[in-house]
Length: 342
Ligand code: 13P
Image 1: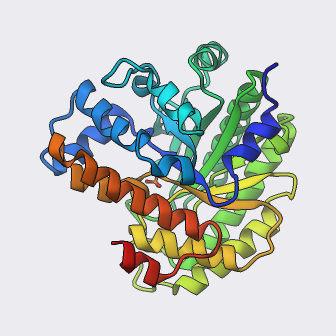
Image 2: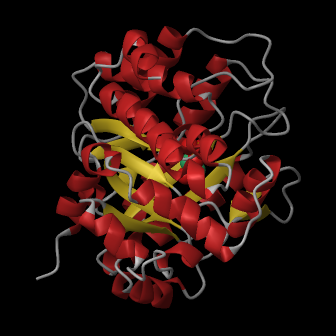
C-alpha cells in the first residue's frame, strides 16, 4: 500500500533531521562550480551529489533530499540509482518541479513561478522514479512599492494549484513562498520583511484553503524574518528568531506538520544559529527544521573542488554542517560544538 502523505510529511520533519536542498538547476550549479574552477558536466554534478548522498551523516541528520530533474534520473558511479542511495540512507527522495521564476507580464520587477502546464503527467512520472515529495518556490522581492498584490496573489495561486496536484499524485508538496533577502533591492529592514512575510503567508494559506489542499500533508518552506542583505540596519540573531516565530505563529495553522526553513543567502553559521534560537523559543505548534541549499553545501563544495582525492574531506565538511544543523533543529547547537568539530 502506498504511504499516506501525512506520514511522509511527518518523516520529512522528524526531530533532529532536516532536508538537503540539492535541487539546483544545471545552470545554477554550473555557476557555483565555475566560481571554484570546477568543470560542470553531468558526471561531475553526479559525483558531487553522490559524495553527499553517501556521507554517513545522511542517516543521522537528513530526512529528505530535493533533487533536480537530471539527478533523479542518474545512477551513482557503481550503477546504483541515486534515488536508491538516498532511500538506503533512510531519507525520502524529492523533486523540484517548478520550471523557474520568470518576469511577470505587466508587473515590472516582479516574478511568477512557472511549471503548471503538464504537471499532472510529470508528477506521475516522478512518482514512478521514486519521488515522494516535491518543491515549488515562489520568489517575492521587497522594494519600493513591491511586492504588489497582483503578483503576490498570482504566485500564491500557482503554489496552491501545484500543491493540490502533488497531493493528488501521492506526493507531499513543499510550499515555498520566499521573501528574498538578496534581491536587487534588499535594503529593507527586518520590520519590512516581517510585514511582507505576514502578507505572503496569509495570502498563500488563503489560496491553499481555496484549492482544497490538505494542510496535514504539506511542509512549509519559508524565509526567516531578516533584514535585506544591503540593509544598513541589520538585526540581532535573537531578533531574527523572535520575529520569525511571531509571524509563523500568527499565520501558519497548527494543522501543518512541519516548517523547514530555506537559508536564502545567510552564512552557514548564521543559518544554524538562527534555527537554534528559533527552536529554543518553543514549544511550537509544528516541527521546525532546515531545508538548506547553500548553507549545507557551500563548505562541502569548496573542500571537494572537483578532485577525487578530496571526496573524503568534502564528505566530512558536509557531515559537519549536517550535524550542526541537526543539533540546531533540536535547539542544542552551541558555538563550542561548532568550533570543536571544525
Ligand atoms: P538555500 O538554502 O540556498 O536558500 O536554498 C534552498 C532552496 O531550496 C531554495 O529554493
